[in-house]
Image (cartoon, rainbow over all chains, first blue to last red):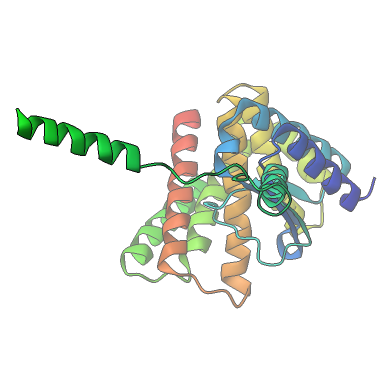
Amino acid sequence: MTTQDFVQTVFNKIQNLFPIASLEYQYKTHSSTHFIKVSPSYLFDTDEFLKLEIAVTDKFEAMKADEIFCFITRESLVEIDEPSLIASSKLYSLNAEILEESLFDKPIYTDYQEPKFEFVLAKNAGNRQYAMAA
Amino acid sequence: MSFLLDKSEQNKIAFSYLFDKDVYAAITHCAYYSCIQKIIYILSEYYTDEYNAGLEQIKGSAGNRHLFYIKEIYHWLSKDKIVDSRSAINFKRMLIELRNSRIEADYYDVEITAEKAEKVKDTFEEIQLLIKRSFSL
C-alpha cells in the first residue's frame, strides 16, 4: 500500500466515524513526519478517536520505520501550510445541499399569508369604548 | 548526576532565561533537547538491552535516531502502562511536534513569534511534567 492510499484510507475511516470532521494532510520532509490536521478539535477527546489514532499510527510505523505519523488540531504547535490532501466535513456539505434545495427549489413560505391585526385592534378599541362607557 | 540529565537541566535553564528575555529563536532548540536528553537517559538506564538493540538496528542515520527515541519511549509508556493510553499518545504527539518545530526554528526561514513561543512553552512544560510524574526525573 502506498502512503497516498494509506492516507486516503485514514481520511475515509475518520469521516465514516465522524462525518463532521474536516481533514488536511501534509508530509513534512524535513522531519519525515506525516501530519493530519483534524477539525473540530474536540474529536481528539473522544475514545473512538483515541482508538483510531493508536491503530493508525501503529500500523503506519510498522510499515515505514523511518517515518512517523501525527494527528494535530488547530491549537497544535505545528501548522499545515501546504496541504496535499483536503477533505471537507461531510456534515457541512449535506447541510449546505439541504439549505440550497430549500432556498432555490422548494420555497418554505409558499402558503405564507399576512397576519390579520385588524380584528385584535377592533376588539381592543371596543373594550376601550366599553370601559369608557362604564 | 548523569551528564545527560545535567545537560537536560542546563537546556531547561537556558529555555527559561531566553524565554524571559523574549529571545525566541533558540527556545525551541533548548526545549526539545532538554526533553530528548532526559528520554535518552531513561531509555539507556531503564530499558538498556532493548535500547542498545534498537540503536544497533538504526545505525548510521541521525534523523532516525530521534524518531527511534520518540517511538521507543511511547512504546514503553504504553506497554508498561506507566501512564494511560491517552496520556501516552499525547506525549508522543507533543514530542513529534516539538521535534518538527525545532528543525524549522533552527534551519528554516520561519519566524518564532511570541504566540508560537507560548505554544512551545506549554508543550515543553507538559512533556516535562509527564516525565517527572512517570520517572521522577
